[in-house]
Image (cartoon, one colour):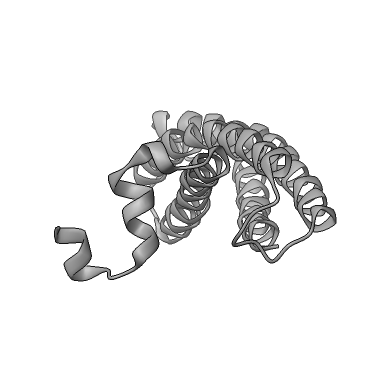
Length: 172
């Protein structure tokens, strides 16, 4: 088969050709990897869009970027839910054949992930506040008020720290 030509791993046949041989823990691990992909997508796409926002000079372009950030951020709650459910599933379905971690480490990771989710909710609210301010400034014909610009600058700085914190927490 085509998969044997590129990847000659004997365990792939059991996982991908005949799904009746897969164990529930393997399904849970596969779903967990999908959740990791969703979370990494939101973190790194958000980081890239935020750096584009910082480089942009026009308010209309900034407004378009924060609208895109909102769309990317909508994937985050789904990724968090998939990760939490599959992570708890991995803990209850263990012991795993391929794992190097103990149950204590998995519990610690769960705590870090709850912290990651809580900071995501907190900074999601701050991000929506920044989005509203930027859209308000971009829709007006007059120059923005100094208070609004300072608030947007402060929220943007906090958003940069948020992406750094999220990357560190997800790597733990």
